[in-house]
Figure 1: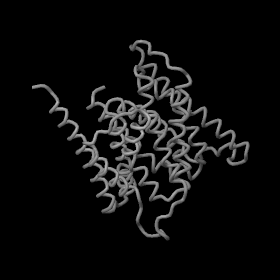
Figure 2: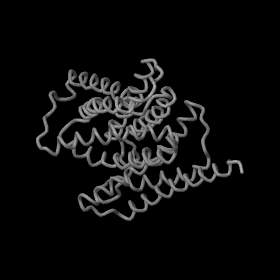
Figure 3: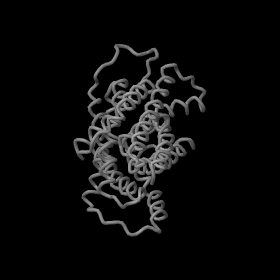
Figure 4: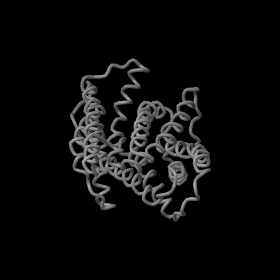
Length: 308
C-alpha cells in the first residue's frame, strides 16, 4: 500500500473512531465497561475472519509467526490499551487525560525510539506540537460546572500506559508479521485480546465486581449501537489503522488519529444540533494544520532526495 492509500485509510479510520465517544457514552449508560470490552472484541472476530478469508484468497501463504508473539501483541498491546485506557479515564482528571491522549504522536515517537531504536523525524516536530495542542483544545470541556481546577486523579498514569501499549502494538504487529494482510493481523489481535477480556470479565464476575448476566438491550438503538461499534470501530477502523501504520509509520498515523475528537464534535453538530465552541473550532484547525504541515515537510524532503 502506498502513502496516499495509507493516508486515505487513516482519514476513514478517524471518521469511524469519531463515533467512539458518543457511542461509548450511550452504551455505558446500560453496560459496564468490562462487558463492553469483551463483547466488542469477540464480536469483531467472526467478521474479521470472513474479511481475512476474502482478502487472503489470492495471496501466498503467510510466514508462520510464533503463537507467543501473537498472544503478546494481542493481549498486551490491544487488550492492555483497552483495559488501561478504560480504567485510566475513569480515575483521572478529564483535562489531564485529554492532554495525555493528544500527545499520542510524541508518545509514539518515544516508544519507537525506546523499543525499536527507530529515529525520530524532526521535520514533524512543529506538526506534532500543533496537533497535540489542537487535540487538547477540542477534547477538554471548559464550560461551567467544573469546580477546583485540574487535579491529578491517579488514572493519568494508566492513560499514559495505554497510549504506550497502543503505540508498541501498532509497530510490533507490522514488524513481527511483515507479510500478513491487515485483516489477518487484526483478526489475531481481536481473537487473543477478546479471550483475555472474557477471562478478566469472568474473574471480576466471580469476585462480585460485575453483574452477570449483563442486562439485555432494552431498545433497538442499543443493539444497533453495539453492532455499529463492532463493524466501524473494531473491524474497519483497526484494519485501516494497521494498514496506515504500515504505509506511513505509527507517529504520522497518530497525527491523523488526533482528528478523532474533532470528528466526534462534528457528528454531534450534525446529528444533535450541538454548537461547537470557538475553542473547539480552533483545536480542529490546529490539528489539521499540524497534519498538513507534517505531510508537506515529509513530501518536500522526499522530492529533494530524488535524483535529477
